[in-house]
Image 1: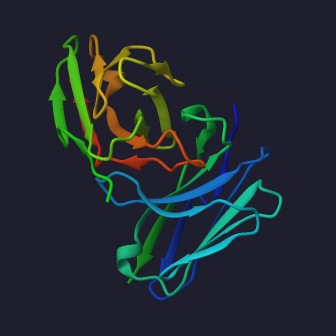
Image 2: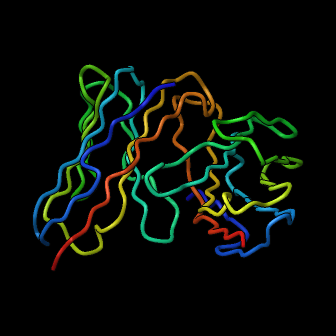
Length: 113
Length: 114
């Protein structure tokens, strides 16, 4: 099946730094999603991207849908302690149902005070 | 806001027991999903359902079954629990219609099999 390569696997940063993570694939996706999972909680949808080239912001978060439709990135500006967690990308091929949704393995964000 | 509720946050069971994990969503979503999440392996799809009484196998269905008797409720069943089923279990739901609807997740059930 399809695979998403999400990197980096983990990040150790100082509070106030900007963060950048990305997902790449050999397959084309029609939708890219970014989720955040806090420790002990379920993933929460942060941003959904529906068109190639689309750039969408949600507060300090900005995500882009790559022109080739095979990649996406998520940036977090001026990180704060509550940004700690695991960030997942997910791609939807549009085939319908769960067959069309593929998850990356996550980027674990750790913020050092 | 979409609300997906999983019946237990933490559960401890014994090997060989039959285990039921319950999930309810309040947004009239057609699709419901069960995943397990393990360190280094990400989210793996166990089963999903498009409609009442309908089910489809995901990537790792062995040792599990599901039940969807009502649209809002999707149950995951471990027929005879084993220690390798110790994991975090996540339920999700989404709309069937509309362009590429995102999935919305519950808070998870951390299941330990002793």
